[in-house]
Image (cartoon, rainbow, N blue to C red; front, top):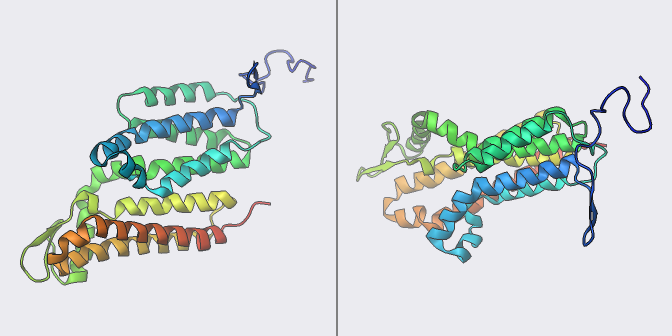
Length: 297
């Protein structure tokens, strides 16, 4: 079928932009593209999703301390969000809206408006899956993969922990018991000197840091090409093992030296373990996982 000069041939052209550029006297002409529209939605959803943690962090420690602690949200997650938005806002050959965009944005908006911040991650996940399936532009597809990775530690990990917390904590307890030479019962590990027991709480589980490994790996792979290689997968597994080892070592030191509980479990111990975890994830991600992912030409 021939295409007329107006872009319509026998009916409406489904590739035509749904939103035209808007002329504003003080800003000039602003073109709202598909990528920039969904970038805005992701930014709104991310802000809404973390709002509860930000509020709690500011309330508990004050604004200055909350900023210093990045609102108790890993730098890896901040970096992943920035990388995804930067990729979505890059100039692209795919400028027009597609079928389903209005429905997906409407459903995501409902999730963002719900009085439960955690539902924002479902909205963001929906956007990511939709962009991954419908985008012709490779950069947009890779950005969508990073956007979905953001939901892993902030939603799916919590959901998995709620469903399998007993099993997850028991695995942590078994590893700690093996390290210090005692036999755990569920998530309770007897101390090495027999003076008491160590209760492994959900906040001490290795699962949260494991999810950060997958976010980091997704960022480094998709910044280069979006194609996973066997070496990249292997280094991701190595990073996960290192992160688990750091967490288990810290808990085991408490089991071996219970009189140093305040030092190991308090702010100093938490900061050291946190920076070690971040360093390992970032180092392996940048030098190995990203290095082994093929570059798109």
